[in-house]
Length: 260
Ligand SMILES: *[C@@H]1O[C@H](CO)[C@@H](O)[C@H](O)[C@H]1NC(C)=O
Image (tube, rainbow, N blue to C red; front, side):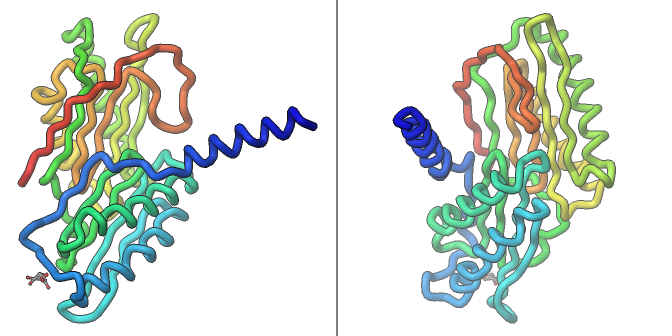
């Protein structure tokens, strides 16, 4: 009996750790959309956020609005398509909490995590529009050993998964892996937001992939986060279902925020 008690205790401690909120990868508060705390727009944001947090997890995507007339605020939230309903739910809840803390005085705000993205604005026109500014970029500090062959393999994998992402049944998600040597596997994932037409998804991904020749060039891992798409590759498994892998890769990152 004592043993099982300890097991339960360890499990609880783990659960508490997992339940703690994760820091976002980035946020963007548009300083040109300033609002005051007591404004109607601010109150509409406060009622929009819990609605988005509730509506998003069942399908992984939601848009919505709150308020009337010129005070109306529009929102969009999406989880990466490989993420479970539970992980999606905790991500959008974190996002809904953090975005208003980070952008308390803006009507136009965005927040990025690995598992989800959330955005609101008092202009409805952002829904369905490709947006690649601002961008948040993360690159592993380490370079790959064999840049030339790496570039070819990465390019081929990206072509494959961006093709998947624009197939209607995949809802903007493409993911895959390629063995690059006996010891190393390359994992990559792309995700467009589901408000986009397929041609716009393709355009967002093409713009994101332009970073592969500069900021991401020859890095062991890289992420490009835009409001309309997410692109990432790593030499370790990072998407679901998680592949088992014994390789270890340094995860120190360079971060670059590309402002509009
Ligand atoms: C959005 O809110 C800002 C700040 O209050 C305001 O200047 C702008 O006109 C609003 N835009 C729309 C479309 O209502």
